[in-house]
Image 1 (cartoon, rainbow, N blue to C red):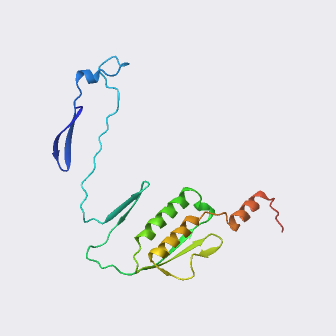
Image 2: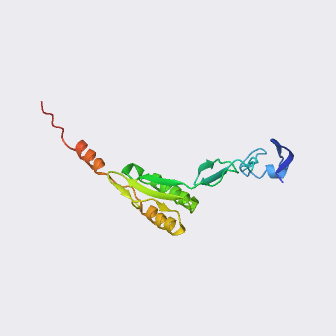
Image 3: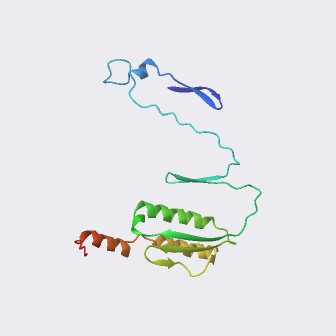
Length: 169
């Protein structure tokens, strides 16, 4: 074994790298006793169980803090989603993924709504809906259809910059 964990005394650990002479000569192109390869040491820290909930998705994380003895309270939540052209690509994908996760976390005594906007405002429903499994499933279907769009303002700005400027005095 090349690596040995000799001493583990939190918060420290002593790791010893001790290859044999034959293992050191495995580099055929090396003139001296050099090792061909990489050494990876992966470690983590112990996480206390009472620090809240951590969610990690695609390299992004969110950390929720709430006291354990706090009773669940019904919520009224309106999600407002920008679908303008600036949300094209990865931003919109991350927004949809986050919404899908958050919708799954709603409790049945919560009420929610979805609003999308660019140069037009669109409501999923014109009222808040109870977070029943059926409504959440339907809302997730709506979320899947949200796409970034060019707005009239964007098109107007493009045409403005492409046209000749006429100045009148």
